[in-house]
Length: 239
Image 1 (cartoon, one colour):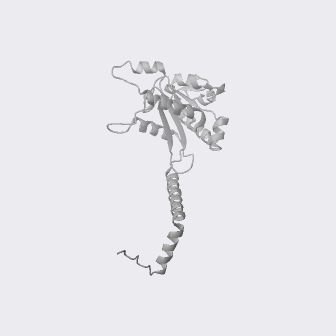
Image 2 (cartoon, rainbow, N blue to C red):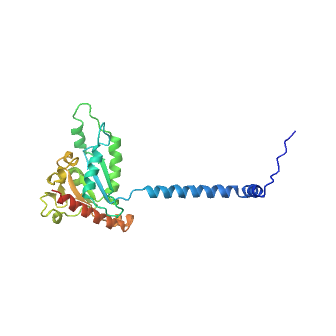
Image 3 (tube, helix red, strand yellow):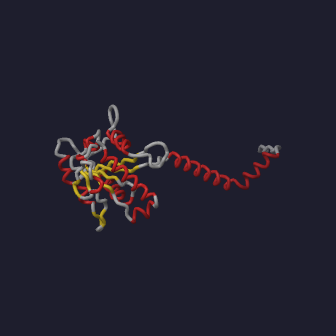
């Protein structure tokens, strides 16, 4: 014998049953979009607003792991935080620091001379792609670069990538490697924790804004450039 389906007595439950029968898929789709919007909103609220963007690219592999204590990455980030400002006015200083292990072929040969030392070419390839994008299109205006990368990328398609820095170094004691590059080791900042371990030929450059970067990042591009200028001056003023 087949069991009879019990009849729903409650008017509210009858309405809900009827509504679900006719609008089940409409409701599921609406719930999906509500959840999607809610999750996206929460993620946006948690996303850091960075006051300054800085990048290192060269043969020094910045350590992100440590058996004990503070990592090298954290030390470098702390040093940059001290010279940056609260440019967005949120009451705290947030610095985005992008370290890229990107040695040249000659530097790879030097690194691998030691027994047992290997270089992960897949990581270098990935870092190269990241660097090629950020050196032109991003808000990473303060760049700490190996001399080989600086020489390779200072001009791209006849466009000068970096800002002349002669007026920035006046009275600071810092030494220019070229008109648009400062020797990091000639600055007091370059002798600070973490940065003192960078290779001696590391240079500091200030990327110029380009038509491409301004079109991609809008008005914020010029603001981030001004913040980078102020931070570079703070770096050079450090005693």
